[in-house]
Structures are given as structure tokens and as C-alpha cells.
Amino acid sequence: MPKLRVNDIFFSLQGEGPLIGVPMLFVRFTGCGLRCEWCDTKDAWTQGEWCDPTELAEDLAATARNRGGYLCVTGGEPLEQSWTPLRTFFREVHRRKVKICLETNGEHLQTWKALRPFTFLSTISPKSKSTLRKVLRYLIKQGKLVRNQTCVKVVVGSSADVQSVCYNAIEVGWPKREAIYVQQKDGMSIDPAEVLHTWKEMTLIEPKTPPIAALPRLHREARLK
Image 1 (tube, rainbow, N blue to C red):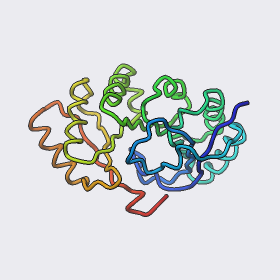
Image 2: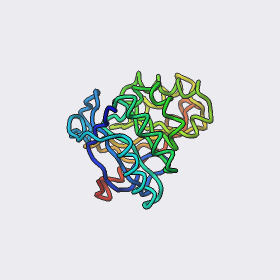
Image 3: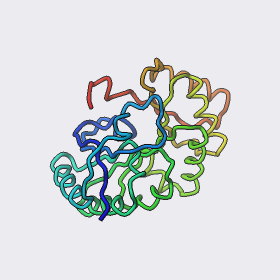
């Protein structure tokens, strides 16, 4: 069977989304075609070791069960792995009663949809305005049940970025009561207080503005991996 390429395995606190602060095991897969300049895991673009998907699932599930029961699958972009070993990995981890939290950039929505039955929570983090709109439209069509198991996170570097997130959500008809998460880019000075101020101004301009949940950069502030 084809193998999966793994960049790193480590234990840390979840740094984003509704489970922020929850301890969990992480597996970081190799590869990402976007090459974002602000990426803080550039070594995951090309570096990693090949692993058998079933053996990897067995080992990680055993460790995760003893450390809270969560496994975060991240990258790079994990959904760029070959389909057959990737599906085998997700299926085998799920079969062992471990909750999979998937982090993906939204460029591979059909693969994400196929793996969703094995996934406890998905964090989709679009890296462009067009992908953000595509993801939001897709999730609206999938329905509220899917959105309850999915959060959208956008990295921002300025108040203008926050405004852009709001306008794009309004444009596609994103439900007003469902929050979009935003988090500061590496090297940028915007903080949660500024995000909140910008969002409050947006609600005065446009009543359809959805909630914005401002996330701290937990990994940096707590000096975690």
C-alpha cells in the first residue's frame, strides 16, 4: 500500500478554533502547494518520513487514547496526501475511538467531505479571498449539521483584513449567528482587542455582519510547539 509522509509528531495544546487550549496529540503531514509567505511551518513543505498508514494509525491512536483522546491532523496540507493511504489512516484512527481534529486550507473540499464521517472537528483556514468565499458557500450548502462540526479560521494582519473577512461572509450569505475565527499572522501587530474594535465598527455599518471570534496566538504566547 502507498504510504503517508509525516513531517512531525508531537504533543501540545490546540492553538485554534473552539477547542483552543485542549491538550492533544498532533501529526503533521508533509506537503503544501500554497507556499504562503507567513507560514510558520515551512519545513513541512518538503521534509518528512514515509510511514505505513495502518501502523501509523495504530501507534498514534494508542498514544492519543492515553493523552485525552484527541488527534490533530495538520500540515503542511494533510489532504494533499495520496487518497488511499489517507482514507485508511482516518478510518483506522476513527475505528479506535480517537477524536480526529483536522486542519486544512479549504483547497480540497471533496477530499474533506469524503473524510468527514471519520472527523470529530474540522478547522478550515482559507488563504485567499476567493477560497474563503468558496468554502463559506460550500458549507452553507452542506447545512447546519456540517457547520456545527466545522469552524472557519482566517489569518489576518490588519483591520482591513478583518473587514475583508466580514464583507466576504456577508456577500455569500453566511449565517449571522455563526462565528468566523480570526488569528494574527506571524510578524503582524494586530491583536484580539483591535479585531473586536474593527468588528464592532462593522456591525454599525452592516447589520448582517457575522460574529468574529478573535484567537490569541497560543503557541507563541505560551512558547509551545
